[in-house]
Image 1 (cartoon, one colour):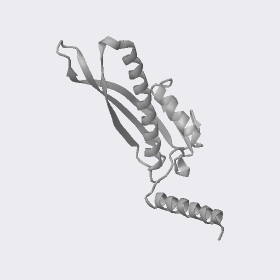
Image 2 (tube, helix red, strand yellow):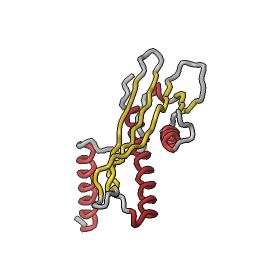
Image 3 (cartoon, rainbow, N blue to C red):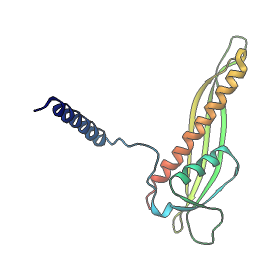
Image 4 (cartoon, rainbow, N blue to C red):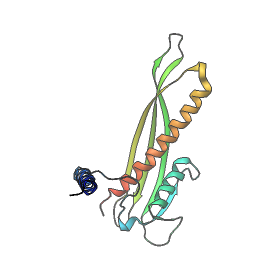
Length: 168
């Protein structure tokens, strides 16, 4: 046989084996979540209507083709963002008494009400360690801002994963 044909078949066989191995171990690309058809239209509300987490959750729901309704007279599922709160706990201090390291604790609480079922409450925490340095306060402030944005993004992803796991 021709050398180029053998190389092409070898590449195709290698690619097929890799795909089968990834599929066999349960690997899936993230992005679209398989939400139940009953959750394709929901009434969405939030305590912090203009907060970053609320904006991110709305954005994720819209990307996943969920129709968001403000107020509905029909019996449709409701999602209410109850709380997102950031706390910090001191982990270590410098010899002069200034805080050297914090643990950031981002808590999220929300509920989903599906007509004919009990209200389902969800709550979770995300934790990150943050090292503070008063000598480079501006850079540390920017780092903290980026870390909080990342935590909110992760929280929005977790909310959609939780919604995808709801069995109706």
